[in-house]
Length: 470
Image (cartoon, rainbow, N blue to C red; front, side, top):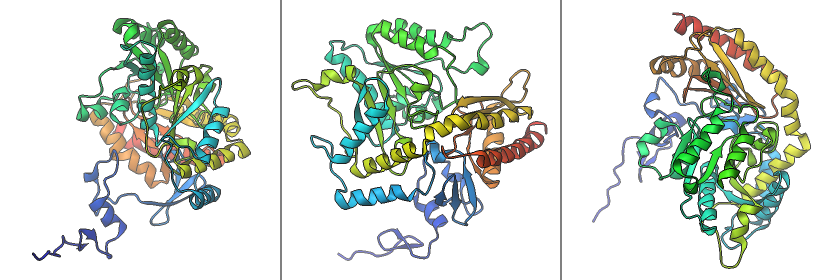
C-alpha cells in the first residue's frame, strides 16, 4: 500500500516544520509553554524569545537587552554566561555523560552530596538528588510517611502547608500547594493535604497576636489528630502571595509544636537556599532546625536541572539498616553532568562570597524599594535578601486591594507588558493580593538597583494615572 507524503501546510514530510519557518511561527505552532495563555500570542503579539544572557542581563531575538530582575525564575543565582560552568559540563560529558544512582554511584554525585552536607547546618547530612523542586517536595513527603511507618506510626500520612503557598505541580506537591486556581483542574489530588494560615503580616487582623499563624498549625494538628500528621512543610520566606516573611519567633514556635506532637518539619527551600536570603540555606537566616530540606533552582544556578532532598541523620537512620530501603527513585537524580555543574556553581559562590554580597547589599536593595512607598499605588514592601515584593493597593490608608477584574487589567493588561517593554523582567502576580516580585541574580549591585528603581517608578506612576485614578 502506498504511503502518502501529503503534509500539513508549512510542514515537511513527517509533520515536521519546513526550513522556511521562523522561530515565532515554530513556537506558536509547536511549543506548549508552561503556565501560559497560549491564545494570547499571534502575529500582532509575538512570543518573547530570549536568546542569550550575560551577567544580570538577557537579550531577545532582536538584540534588545533586559535586566533579569527575576533570575529567570528565582534560580540563575550566579548570573548568566558563566563559561566555566559550561567547561565543567563538557569535561564531565567527556568522562561520563550519564549513569544512574540506582544501586550505583559516580564521583560527581558523591562529591556533591558531601559538599551539600558540609554546607548544610547541623546534622543535615543525607542528600537524595532529584531533577527539580516538585520532585524534591514529593520525595520529602514520601520520606516523612515512610519514616513514620518504619517507626510503627502507619496513620501518620497527612501534610500541613500554608494558604497560598506554592510547593510544586506534581500531584503530591500540588496537594501541598495552597492556591485554588492551580489545583482545581486536577482534582482529586493526593489525600492528606491540609492548609493553615500564612504569615501575611500586612493584612493581619488587629485582634491577632503576631504568632497566631504558628499556633494555628498546632490547632490543625490537634484537630486532625497528631497521630495522623506526618509533617509540616513551610518556606522560610513564602513565595506566592508576595514574599511573606515570618514574625520573630515564628519558626521557633513551629519547631516546638512539631516536636511536641512528633511531627516532622520540612523546610521548602527550592527558592530560599543557595544565597537567595544571604545564606546557603534559608533556615539559617531564621535560626531553626528542620528535619528535611528541599532544594533545587540555585543549586546549579539553573544551568542544568537538579534538585535535592536533604535529611537529618535522625530521619535517615532507620533506612540505613539491614534490608530496609527508601523505595523511591528518579532516573536523573544526581545526574553526573548536573552534579558537575552544581560543583562548579558552588565554587563560584565560595570564591566570590555571593552570600556575603547579598547580606552586604540587601540594605541598599531594600532601601531602594522602600523609597517606592511614596507612590500612591505601593502599599507594602516585604521580603529578605534578594527576594523582595511590592504589594499594590487602591488605597494606602485602608490597604484596600484590587478586585479580580481590576487585577486582570492592571497586571496582565498593563504592568507585565509595560515593565517588559522598558527592559525589566520581574513578576507581576496576583496569587493573593497583587504584587510585583523582584529576585535579581546574586551578583546584582548598585547599577542594577538604580535601573530597577527608574523603571518601576515610571511604570507604577503610569499605572496609577492611567488605570487606577482614571
